[in-house]
Image (cartoon, rainbow, N blue to C red; front, side):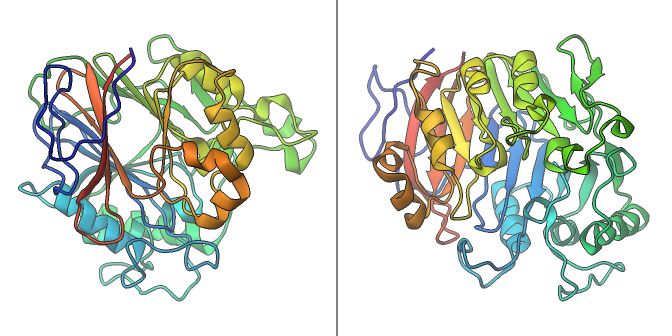
Amino acid sequence: MLGLVVATGGVAPTATQPAAPARIGEVLPAWTPGTLDIHQIATGRGNSALLIYPDGTTLLIDAGDAGPTAYADPRPDGSRPPAEWIARYVTHMTAGRDARLDYALVTHFHPDHIGVITGKEPMSKTGDYRLSGITDVGDRLPIGTLIDRGYDYQPPPASDQMFANYRRFLDAQVSTRHLQVVHASPGRTDQLAPQHGGATSAPFAVRIIAANNLIWTGQGDAARVRFPPLDQIPMADDRPNENMCSIALRVSYGKFDFFTGGDMPGYPVPGAPAWHDLETDVAKVIGPTDVHIVNHHGSIEEENPFFLATLKSRVMIVPAWAATHPSPDVLKRMLATRVYPDPRDIFILEFREATKATIGARANQVASDHGHVVVRVEPGGDRYWVLVLDDLSESYRVTSVHGPYSSQ
């Protein structure tokens, strides 16, 4: 189950060191049919990920833009908005095919996942909405289907100008670009199915695990309710918040499994109801997982011991961009061999020096502290590699290579 971690440079592969998909200093080779690519894009302003399925179907998960802050640095720099960097990254990684996205998915309605709106952002030339995050990406790259958590579900999103702008974006894109808008349905695998056909060498599926008040049961495509009725929750602070409603996904390719869950929490704040722990319920239905994205950037209420011990992930990726990511307590749990004894590698998109200083010596135990992180799963899903790319320019050059890892 465990892979040999190597940093490859100009050394030729041997019988005990399989050929890596790239060498340090090279531009990342293009995706090839049968391969599953999972890119975590570092912008320094929020979350964004690009998946390229084995058949070439593309899925963008989030396009965050939290706006300029004093506690984060833009990547590669501040000369373009995050959405433009994201669109350029997608265009480069899908070279040779139409510059479009088959799917875009919004995990939940927070600025670092869909884009802040203050009223100062530029207006779109094609509709009555401002450009930031997903609305800006949608203007630059046509989107076939957009999936969100369902804006008519309970609890409702905040009634602010960001969400109102997002709704205007959807209305305009539906009428002018024939965008299809779908509300996430936990348990199902057909909402994010491959679009380009062709048989794969192993089963492939993207299953929606949780969204809003529903979670997959682990059987077929059935889901169950996980929140109490809202009218039975007397305290407003105890009601589900936006993070709790995040869409969570599992991607399976042969033996390989990947999980991403937006900002869902795993530790209720002191005095809060036990059902605020959503990670435990998710862990029970997904089980061991090769690679997972650390929930909520590694903030303090995430990555509880049961979740970590159940997934036993060989690779964990922290989509950090602020000085508070990851929390010292979360990194301690992630590294703890008492939680589970197996080896693990941790990759952080932007591990700020101030954060490292606060954490201390434990900060030196991560595999990578900055850069785009690409998981490249070989055809069939038996093995995968992790490649870190330069995030200080658009070189797309590989700065470190890790693997191969054997899928569980």
